[in-house]
Image (cartoon, rainbow, N blue to C red; front, side, top):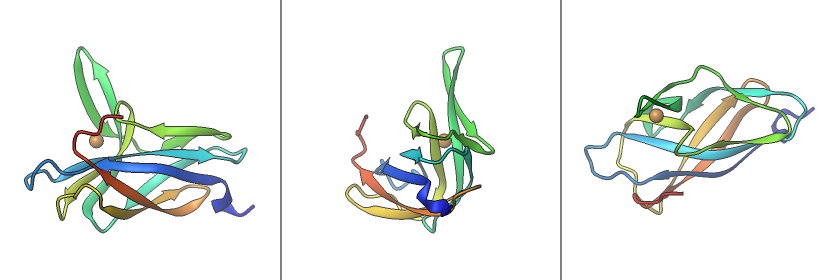
Length: 129
Ligand SMILES: [Cu+2]
């Protein structure tokens, strides 16, 4: 099986940086696993930030928190959506503020499918979705 025929990534986006003093950003996207095998994200890389992590939002006692997830499970034969209220890819230590209308690349490593490059669209700050 050609590993990269199993995982497809679409609709990858983030919000523009609100100011020059913001050095973090969250990336959202949809992962489609067309194979019969579960996969998982093992790491994320990009030149534009010092550290990239998979994060999960949790809501406890009225407080939203986020924290790293070790290996995000990608179930077979379905879409896994990373959205503003759930999982996201966290960019920590951005080297430049993100500008609306620009694009950047990152590479997501999957345990089964290997490394997959993703182009991320930078949308205006107040994009909700
Ligand atoms: Cu985060």
